[in-house]
Length: 112
Image (spheres, rainbow, N blue to C red):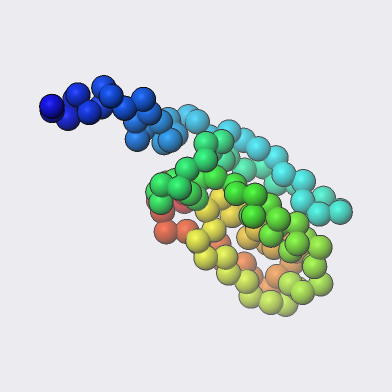
């Protein structure tokens, strides 16, 4: 049996979980009681492929963003960094809360 036979027997190939070009959608998030509105491009597919995790806005990112928005008094005058930010929802919320500076980073070119 050659590799093409293996692929024929597989119902879902590895590319099933990878986004196709143009799969990103613009999604708007209203964060906090006095809403901070942010529109971000995100991939609607869930995947744990290390190259694609930063293109998804994970539920925990939304939870963190809401928590940070509920504590605006801690950011003015502080220097903040979000490392491995992915879509950067939490970092962008903090940037709107008047820190002295806010750096948002990620290591994957597809995310940047």
